[in-house]
Image (tube, rainbow, N blue to C red; front, side, top):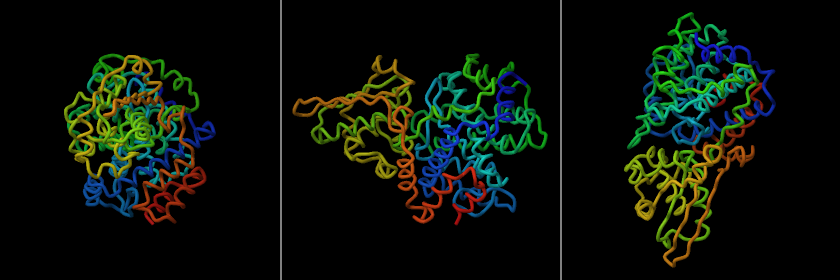
Length: 453
């Protein structure tokens, strides 16, 4: 195999729980709790219900349970629905670099395979830490988006390592799992262009499904394509036009214990991450001026935000789907100015005339100084001019949940409680929180038992 495949596989084989730093173990548990929070927030949403109905027709005696259910299906299918739940509200964690990523999408692999294998908590924690290390490092190495490909291609690499580690694959079989995942499953960026569909929330889930499938095949001795990353027609040439910086993989090649999860960010609001600071700036402005008094709004941002959630796509000015609204910096800013903090309930009336009217008063532009701060910071500056002529400006560089502005354990618990209250009884909520904080002493199948009770 090639250098990348070999490095990732050897890393997955070499790292065990005893090599994980204490703060990494704790952070993995925080991400598991955060993942459950956002997953159960989406439990009754239409795309999740549709996917759950589709897989319920393929129940079997052997398999994994979908979160919150008792029936069993093939682990890759369970990973897909779990991943869809996790991703639907755009409320799970984020990492921004040359390529953006929602790394906790890969935790769906730990839920599904952890259940069917009866994996202990230490194994699950280790596999997740390894997956984060790989996927985040790849985001630092090259941009997929620049070449028209989707970030979930990196996510699936991390998911493959999560699955391979839980299955106990050696380095050779893990290399084949990576090859089986990487070559056949390239995802296009078209998922996130124009009016966004249900697939926006499913693309990462599908990458994880493919990863679990690849690892299950490799576990049986199935072999994958030669040199999947560096080959003549491989990942780097086809998806990255030959652009790849090996520097970010140096620590993986040296088998440095996992730590990159500490560089990622938990979301306080269910909006695309580049808009988190815009929401916070809007909330500060809301304390100074009422929405009905606003004459003009100027949003100054950085290039990535402008390209991904800004005015380039006309649909972002006039969204008809939840997926488009949460990827519109204009919509979420207007909603925050009008109604306060964005929650999952904010999307119940996407066509709210007051929001659409306020958006018409907006101008969005890239500020070169803000752009220089990205991706270490994610700054948005909003200026509001009132009908009286008064001007108000707020700039936020680091949203709550960023390593420079962290979310406390208590705040994370509050996020879990708020987002699961409609699905989980209060007694069960408390039991889940307690279970996750002691995950290293528990079993993943026990977690799925608890969530199905």
